[in-house]
Amino acid sequence: MSVIWQGWLNYRGRMRARQATRWPSFRTRDKRRRLAGGLALICAVGLGAAFWSPQHAFAMGLWGGSIFSWLFVYWVLRETTSSTAESPAQLLDEWELGLRNRAGYYGYQAFIWLSASYLIFLAANMHDPDIVGKAMSVYSFIVLTVTALPSIVVGWQLPDDEIEGEPS
Image 1 (tube, rainbow, N blue to C red):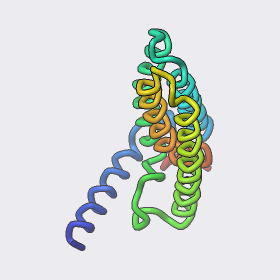
Image 2: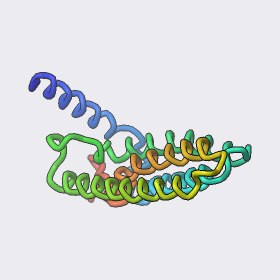
Image 3: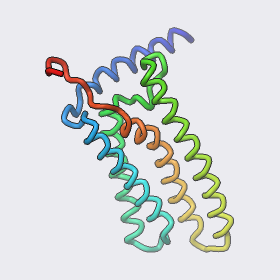
């Protein structure tokens, strides 16, 4: 098993090294914060559209558009943070590890509270004939939100990347 794990760590290390060279203009604190804020806004819009009736074409279009925009912004944010929120502990220094663990804790807490809210939502709407469509669209965005939250926290808190050869 350790051979498999070591191979996975080697792969993740190479992937982090590749990610460090992508999107160089987005590796400033300001731009990462814009990405993190935009992703949080997309999550809020998607959740709001999911709570709206699935029979409204506008709400479903907004919900579907939120999913596709979420995918792109989440990918860019993960690339610009070098997947710090998702990396194994062996690949991170102490500061990054503390940041990753804190962000993961926030994601866990959000999952607990959003899941409890979801159960209350289901109980309150159990007689609604559209509950199946609403329930699936709401829960899908709850999952997307708690998946993105650690990367949002890391993206918000990471300092500017130091570029080699640039004067300090």
